[in-house]
Image (cartoon, rainbow, N blue to C red; front, side, top):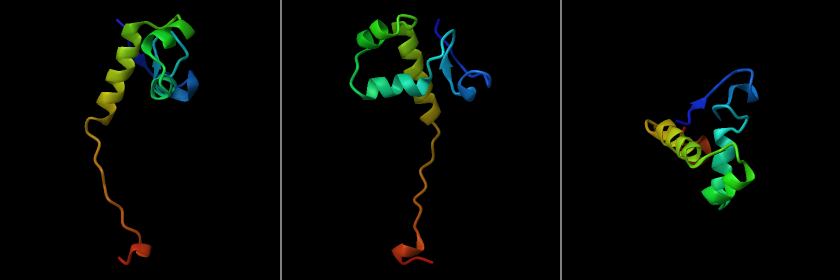
Length: 79
């Protein structure tokens, strides 16, 4: 089973797919650019479909409890 791990000695502690130096951020960027899972796996054979699902699950969990705060500046007429 693919895991997402963080190690302060690898990529400054950014979350990565275990056993690689590929960050969650990088893989999400590839997906956001329009690459398919198959294209990513072809470019990075150390990844699997399971790895990409683990990245997506990690991102979903990271946003699960996110709180949006509307910040109003003094330029908006509020002091």
